[in-house]
Amino acid sequence: MPLHPVFGDYSGSASDQILSVLRAVRRHLAMDVGFISEFVAGDRVFRFADSETMHGPVVVGGHAPLEQSFCYYVAKGLMPGLMQDAAEDPVAAQLPATRDLPVGAHLSVPLRHADGEPYGTLCCFSFTPDRSLTTRDLATLRLCADLVNSILGKDRDAARQRDAKHRRIAETIAAESVEMVFQPIYRTADDSLAAFEALARFTAPTGQGLMSKGPDAWFADAAEVGLDGELEFLALRKALRALPSLPAGVRLSVNLSPASLAAPRFAETIAGAPLDRLVVELTEHAAVASYEALRDALAPFRSRGLGLAIDDVGAGHATLRHVLDLAPEIIKLDMSLIRAIDAHSGRRALTEALTGYGRRIGCEIVAEGVETEAEYAVLRGIGVTRVQGFLTGRPMPLAAAAALPLSGTGAWTRRAG
Image 1 (cartoon, helix red, strand yellow):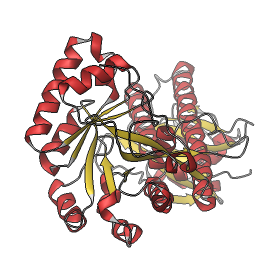
Image 2: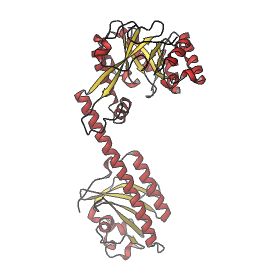
Image 3: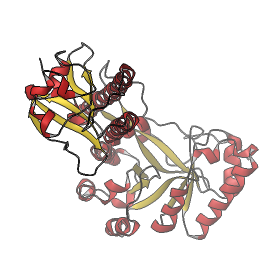
Image 4: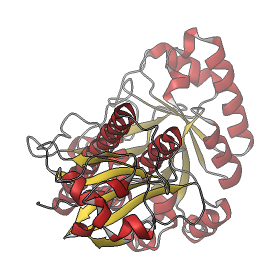
């Protein structure tokens, strides 16, 4: 029979589920040993095992010639799936395992591919015969085999999707298919241009399956397949290439995870960049493994002018920890606080508290997602020092960003009092 390895790359979650199914059915059938085998290159390999004793006779990873196993004969239809006493079956009686283990009662169901080809078995056996076993017990085992097949099928589908995702993202990185756009950030004191935030925009060939996904989804996918650092540094390199084209004196803000900020590649990537014009934004979406280590990693760059901003403050508890332990120069208030702040007393109260705290520790306060003049008026009155959003400027290509005037006049029109 053709042999199709299946179990090599199943996930930890699938493994836990399969072992739970095996343990449950073995106990339900009151058998001494349960196992799942796979047929690989002429061998029967034990992939899962469960028994009443800690040191059972079946060892995961153990293997033997397939044609010397019960599994082979059951899968070929040469031995019944249900044997109350294996010694009474003429085929089983000739197999060494029947005497050596010994095998008394035995239940076995083949695991099959969608085309019907067997690739393994789900088995339970006892050391002594059991005359109480019926075809209903075999049907229960068959139901569990179907469940194992379903778990493996879903896991294989997920693995294929991860592989395809990894391939698409790796190809995007290799081709540098990332474009940067720049959203302006204005001072509320005089409407002058203070900075740009560099934002990644992605393109993929038609049919790649990621065309409709936004930047957050791209970075989340990259993190899932272990390419988040590669993608972040690509975006950073692209942003830094644009910096000389932006108006002099205007800072550039880039988003990086804690892991990327602490990586040796960060120093290599920003080498030669004017750090007094660069701000790194840290969000709460990736955990900080060690605040002390991150502070130490950033200290040499911050001493030379690199700015640190904490993004999405107010969206979750982690950003408050970032503010307390990293002492940023800039606090960026999450847009969930800003939306309709002119009509929402709770959002206004929290924004006032965060803004007051920021002022006391000497931070610039940036309100993100400002869309209406009414929101702007409230924020300016609260004491927010900078604003960013569709009201003052959407993300734009480099050429448009480079052409913006430094003063508010002509860059955007504010009619709020």
